[in-house]
Image 1 (spheres, rainbow, N blue to C red):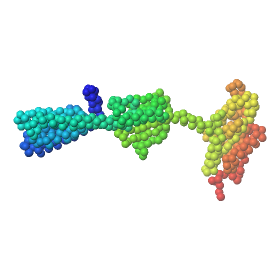
Image 2 (image 1 turned 180 degrees about the vertical axis):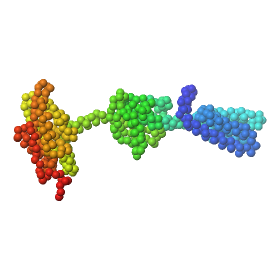
Image 3 (image 1 turned 180 degrees about the horizontal axis):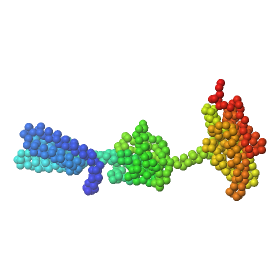
Image 4 (image 1 turned 120 degrees about the vertical axis):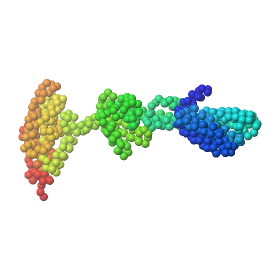
Length: 527
């Protein structure tokens, strides 16, 4: 049992060392104070020699041990004995008066700060031996004082009996103080681990010794477990980074699923292969250090998985400068699929699914911009509306799949024949249009329309049936110089020109006549 108790004490010694190092310094100061007390008592019985011979070496050795072996058991045991040395010296200087013996009680109580019952026992054994040996020597006529009369054995037994309950109480208190000190230091150690992000599941060596009888430790361990569970179930990948060493301290399961497993104890954050751009971490730290709230919220960065796959992520970073060492919490969310979905939705909203040309909403935006540029800046523009000729027979003869293929070819040819600044679009069915930007005159627009008709007239080979078909197109052209004041008016002019082309025999271009009174843009007209 004693061996097991000593083994437990050995485990506790490590955690309680900060207490005991401070206690060593206090005890050295107490020894120096007791030396001064003894020096003050020396004139009473001319005990200067005893003060020098006993007190000075005791203080000197206490100072040496506190400097060379701080917090060690040997130093604690000596400090307990040193207190009793001065107790014996005070008893001697007082001539064995009973008041001199009271010093032992106060000094042993001071030893409680060590939180070690062994120090109490060592001091008790020392003072008992002092009373026994020197008290007996006093009866033999040796010039030392322990008791004030010659009833040695009676006095010795009374002192032992009187002192034992006090010593038992002090030893008991030291055991409980040791447990409370151990619990407090253990809680501090656990809190430091939590603050630094060391939320590992395996317990530290000191943590394994914490029993259920220590409720504060159990509560902190429970908090640590809850935090670990919270970190584990978080759907967002998270990592805790220690700033001074630049290492990743901890990652959660979401991180390992999305990025890949990391060696959380040795992974250097700034040189980590997760960054597609090696300077990303340096840039992030420069940004967050000047941020007012030490926060970067949802910035997009490119990362790489462990297998090298690039992923687009939304990254947030929080810097905690109020803890030592400074820590940062990094969260990343893979938005690659979300961004692709957004791009797909954007494309579906503004692109014709069959021909991959801009659709009506895109056309409306382009028409609004062209009309505004004409009205405010005088930038000329024109609109070509196209209707395929001979498309219905292809659909009826070869089926809808062949008709869809023809429409896709028409869309591709429109993209090829137009200038880069122009916008071809599908209105629906077999109707198309082209917005011509910076087109100076109506004749220029008509020439472009004719070029489009010629391109569309080329035969189209249908892959599914290994056959060729031909379609034509009629075009109606309306220039902004024709006086259109709204997009609807502009479209109406082009539609009327298209109707005229159809009525004139198809496969041709017709233009909307200009309106002389409205041929200039609004900003250029004089009042």
